[in-house]
Figure 1 (spheres, rainbow, N blue to C red):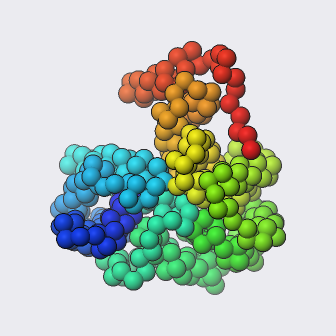
Figure 2: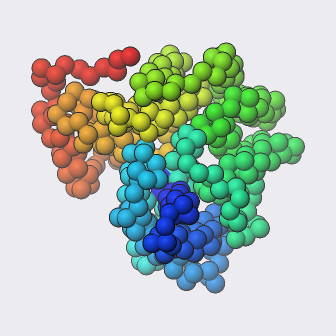
Length: 397
């Protein structure tokens, strides 16, 4: 969730700048001047033909370099608290700057496919950030359009999601889902559109009716994979129970915390094994609730707990292309409460995720920098990884 993540920072900073005094006019203009380059780059890496076209090569490299400069500037100077009190923003901006630099280096070394793989995965992180809950500005009135008319409806949906134009994104995803051609139901874009549309409906819109519409499209699709239909049947049950809750919403920090814990418990009761997707609707709700809590967690003594809860939800939702976001939250949890039982719990989850990520048919081999990072975090959590007199950490209502 990385390079196009800067859409959120840029647009949010631009919106704030409009309300401030003349001294921020340069920043505001820089934000506005960035629209075209960001639109061009996102369009280029989304389209196979545009990225492969030799005539676009020099321009793509310049755009990636400009993006890296913007990412560094945003990470160094943008105030995450001004944009959004959720501490996730600081985590994402650092990740954005890091990955943008890697892409630029790969392009300069002529490792174009590797660079493209970096650039193409970044919108997924951005989308996960932008759809984490309903917070953040909407940009439906901004003249922000793809720079090519050749994008597929699915790619246009991802473009509009990355730029927080959620209503337009849903229109494009529903075009994919409602495509009457039988072969459409067999496509990867169709299955991914299900996930994207469901995420927006649940986390951003918090609209069970829209979520049910997505699920019904899956259940009515003859060509839909049987495993997806089986998942959708459980999603439908979760959505109907959601409707029965009557739209009650917490309005205090402790209320947000308890709501997140409630949804986590509900999701765990549904999920049968780690890769089981049947609890996705509830985990999507839990992740949104975790971010609602993180936005007010500084008013409580439970910021570390909010980070842990967000990490757990993103680890479960990893197939939704949230990448290593859960590792960021576990690391932040360790750094927030070193030498506490909760830090030990977060380290164990972090360590397990790292080893799993580096495990393949050739066995497990961790690069030196990764081993050093593990050692650092282990010492922060508990040098012996023993609970001592702290006891095991448990999430408690």
